[in-house]
Length: 436
Image (cartoon, rainbow, N blue to C red; front, side):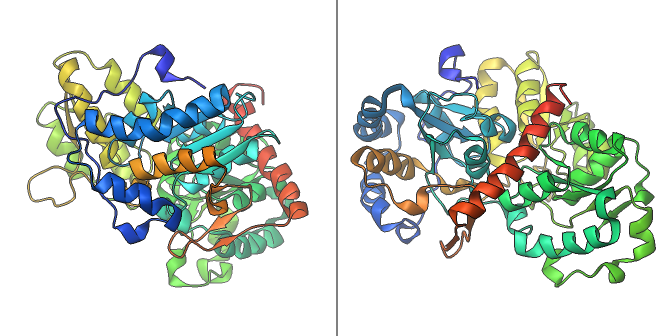
């Protein structure tokens, strides 16, 4: 995995500007983290120099203690400027595909600390070596899409589908799922996918003559089907899981029998706000419009390009001076691009920032729960040997981000899950690397 500290930082903190970080209420912190939060909140300002002096007190001793065995990670979407702070301390900022490979491709890293969401940390843990430990800075950091695709919701539907279609059905589990659904993909001959490679993975399944159960999300699934030329009448989206138990006969068995792809009916609240009207507004003003493929199909078709967070950032970096971009994705990502755009001579706007809209800058609230106190506290507690067990992420863990309750598998159950889920992840890697 690329460490951007070695190749030059993607992000820059301007010394004279306050760090953009929404402060969480004190009672949102675990008891072990409250002292760090209280210190952070008492800082006289949020200027980088002040924040660095405070963070250095905790981060640098931890780095000295763990040496090269420590790996810091963050996802592009993390709220505020935690991505810039992680990168400042030698960590890597990446999309979900690159994060999943972090431990697998760096066996010398024994302590992996992730400032991202739980399903990302669990994917790292599934592919990790036995002597590697994965920690998340805030166990409450989750994903609304994944919350609507928990195993207790999906597996009963999968059982109905498998009873009807048997080996003719395979599951493609989007990265934004827990390990128990990645294991479902593994044992049904399927694979994991990300937004950057969903079309490759689904195409691989179809070459085997399989009907694809795509979990989740509805929009990425539909966009993938369109990209592959699958007629939309052969794509069936299941009902919204919030409406109650899903029974196939109520969906329509004839429709399902004809379907080449069956889509789990959840979606990302951040990306469903983007509309063709927003795209046209910015295009008429000379902007190139780029969107994430979790957006509705009509929006993707109207845009000038679509792709994963890595694609979006690379397209931003390639834009020549004088270029104008309207980006439809998570708000913190766009803010970070905008803050970098001035030095590049590029103008960046958030796609939803049009007259009459109240949706501009929409960020992922659950991903924004990683902040400087969580980073400082996690590293300091690990150094002391007192890290809370709830922050340790093992394959198969199911986290309730609201209550902080966690279901953890037995060792035997976890080993079985790891085998199946790792198979699904490795199949994805083989497809992407051209080995499948």
